[in-house]
Image 1: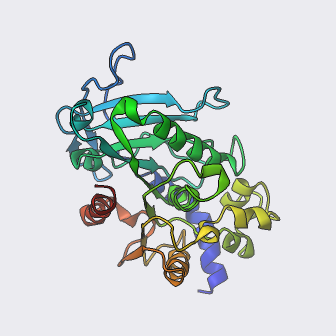
Image 2 (image 1 turned 60 degrees about the horizontal axis):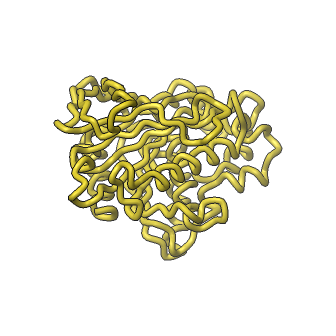
Length: 315
């Protein structure tokens, strides 16, 4: 199969596989009464992709559907915040935060799915954000929403006993793209200089969107064209590409990608990591042997490596 044929197959399968980018670990937690403290315990179990019960630890809490802009133009401009028991101890050390960004080809997915339980069990606060999808707005709306959500978390960190000096981002597929873009621009470009991210985990996200335009993935109904607002948006594709923001002093970044991924080709992550290494940036590439897009499920070994990465860089 030629590269062009392979890419066409990728595009046709994208809608099927992109849902995996959302990693649907549905949280079965109750929304706390907003009239009481947001640190009120409301722990409940959640279910991961393969149906194994993953209980949130005792004393954990969640605050849902927090609007992260003062005047939302979309219901999707909201986040959920999961807090470990330690966050309620005002006399103790503040907790680090990991922000989860869901996948779904920038046109589907929801904050309801995410790896909250393992993060909370390890003592992290975990925020999951929704952002405007391409049926509502084109780029840069998705990136802008992520910036606004993280900025809100920085501004309100003290209210939830979160240490704003220890914040990381993690996402998958389209969420991996947004996590890498946000993490590489945060604390660096003018629009995100006030939200320094300290660690980035990118799961199989596209790093160079100009690749999609070259391969004609930017057809009118294609996900990259929908994101950018057309197939002729080369300058915007560069602006929206994480690889464009590589620098020596960027935060540590862990990139994980399956070597059988036929949605976002492995070379996307390889090129990003090569450029990061050439710049002298702290980067780690983990290639998951035999794995396709989404790793075929949320494997414990992949999650363990992510947790170790965040513990090393945020605790």
